[in-house]
Image 1 (spheres, rainbow, N blue to C red):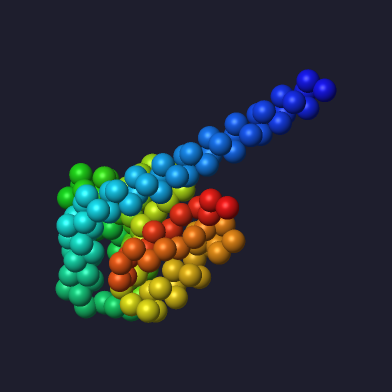
Image 2 (cartoon, rainbow, N blue to C red):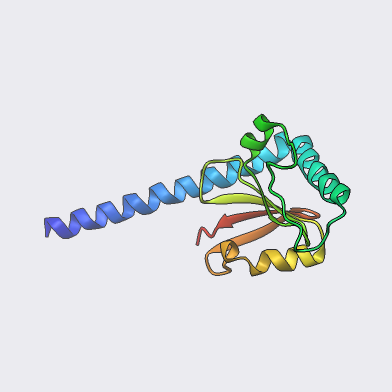
Length: 142
């Protein structure tokens, strides 16, 4: 009987810890977006300018977020990653967590691309539009 009780207590504790981590990551990610909004916009603008100056909006044109020349401190702080050039889709992971990320989708085609990503599997993740073109993707808390 004691082992069943121990297993139950362990399971409940595990659920509570992961749930708290999920909520904390969600909250910290939103807070980062509000506090560092200018930096998020600057990163998007720099990536768009870099792409446009290369005159390549085609899928065959590839470059990484490191190629763009974004300030290294900002790059690291916001966890910048380019998932697609055309359509432009950028992922930001400002919190070191699997639970919440910010995505930028330049066009409707970019949004469609986002919904097709395995990282946004509908039964496991929730995608909330924070603002036009900006999404918070978080592990579903349900």
